[in-house]
Amino acid sequence: AKIKDVDFVKSSNRPKDCPKDDRPEFAMLGRSNVGKSSLINFLVRKKEVALTSKKPGKTQLINHFLVNKSWYIVDLPGYGFANAPESARMDWSSFTKGYFLNRETLVSVLLLIDASVPPQKIDLDCANWLGRNNMSMTFVFTKCDKMKGGKGRRPDENIRNFLELIKENYRQHPPWIMTSSVTGLGRDELLFHMSQLRNY
Ligand code: GTP
Ligand code: MG
Image 1 (tube, rainbow, N blue to C red):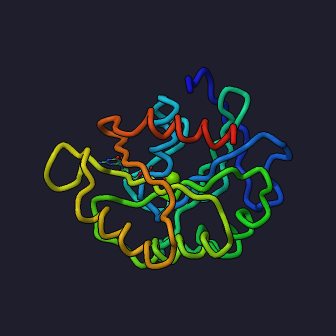
Image 2: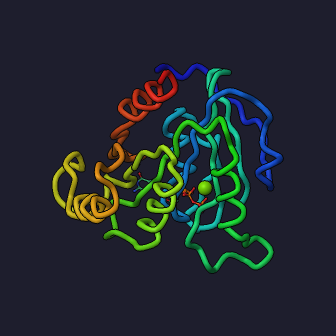
C-alpha cells in the first residue's frame, strides 16, 4: 500500500458538488479537533496537504484528495463544535448526512475518536447513526501518544470503555485501529486495512 502521489482535487460546499467519479473513497469523520486533517497528512506523509489547526472548526468544506490517481480520501468538517463563527457554522446534519447517504462510491467511513478523552456521547450517537444507516465504518482512535501509561500501543481505559459502550448497539463492533500522527503508530495498519476494503 505505497503512496506515490496525492493531489488535492476540490472543495465542495454541497454534497452534489463533489467530484463526479467512480473511484472509491474514504471519509474522515469525527469531532472538531480530533485530528481528521492531521490523519490525512500522516497517511500520505505530507505536511500540509490538508490544513490543520489547534483551534476547532478549521475544515469547513468537503475536501477531496486523490491518492495514486486511484482512490480518494475525503476531509470533512468536524461535528460537535458549537462555537464556530456564525458565518462558518453549518447544519452538520443536513450537510454531512446528505453526503453520507448519497455518495455511492463511499467505501467506508473512518470515524475518528480521541483516545485522550473518555467516551463522548456525541461520538457514540454518531456511530449509532452510521450503524443504523448500514454504513461501513472503522473506528480510528487518534492521539494515542497522549494515552495514560505505556507507550501508547495498548488500548487504555478510554478506548476499552468506548468499545464496551458500542457493544450495546452492535453484535460485533466495527474494526478499530489505534493511531498517532505524532509517533507514527497505526499508519501501516490503517493503509493495509483501507487497501483490503478497496479490493473487497
Ligand atoms: P477540524 O478541521 O476543526 O474538524 O479538526 P480536525 O479533526 O481536522 O483536527 P486537526 O487535524 O486540525 O488537528 C487538531 C489538533 O490536534 C492540531 O493541533 C493537531 O496537531 C493535533 N493532533 C492531531 N493528531 C494528533 C495526534 O495524533 N497526537 C497529538 N498529540 N496531537 C494531534
Ligand atoms: Mg480538519
